Length: 167
Image (cartoon, rainbow, N blue to C red; front, side, top):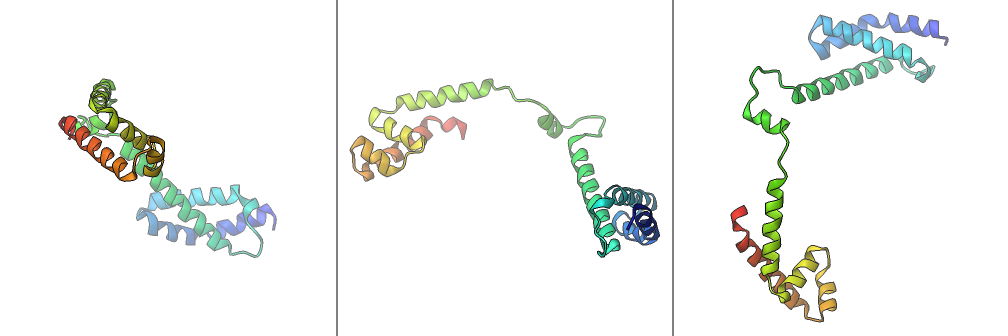
């Protein structure tokens, strides 16, 4: 099939495409735009169509995918852009940047809490936090695995108590 024959067949299906488009858009103008976009894509990607396949089904698939992509793009745009005169506090939180200074204070408090732990609790706790398994900590420190679990538990409780203001 040459391009002229293909274009003629695509145009022949325009009425059925328009009624199918109205199912999606519920609006004549939007349906006409969707049909036009579908026909443009079909003609543009003529080389992807295989002779002997269902042209109408192919066009319907193009239309459905076009509608879904447009719908997603519109929703994404509407969620990113505020169309109100006054911006609410909820929208300000989304568009504002955070001052990272508060993180510095939190990290300082965490470091103070860690430094307040005795060496017996500090080492197993930090090793566990770094990703070591209980048995690895036990082997490296040459202490029973139960002792490792207890020390980590006690260190967690002490850290929670020291950092209770962050709950």
